[in-house]
Length: 169
Image (cartoon, rainbow, N blue to C red; front, side, top):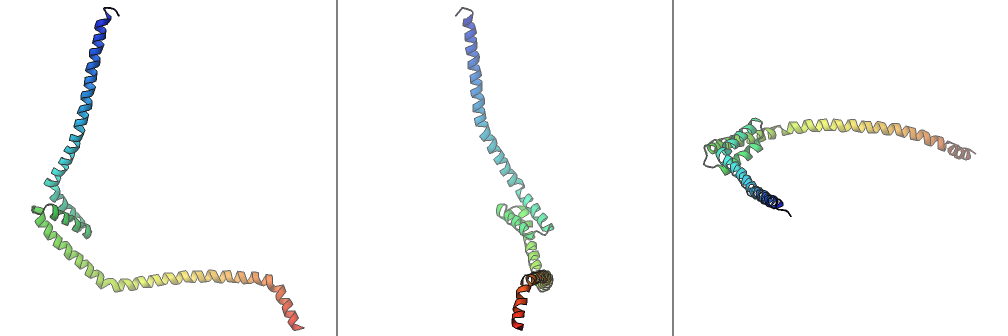
């Protein structure tokens, strides 16, 4: 090793030490930052739920009512009343929940009053379809039976004639 190599070796060692330190710093930063970011995202979501959750659930329930999806509306309203019972939206949600219950009862009553006519129409259409299917099957059987009888006659005709002639004698 020459005198000129000494400072170069020390320079390389110093550079390696700095690079290694930076790598350790980056790894430690990533290890510490990633969980903090995940926790931050969770907390942001929870904060949004606390600040806007009641309004979102009420809006969602109203949309379900508009589309006549009353079961989903009722679920949204139940979530609203459970998670945000003291919010101003909960007051409106209680009224909407009563309206939804009335609409469900009205729909059920309408169904019950219409069920006899619906059942009769269903029975008539199903019976007509079954009759048509039965007629098609019967036609197929008749066609197959005629062909089978013709083939069997050709196979059995000679034996039957012999039996007939034996009985004539």
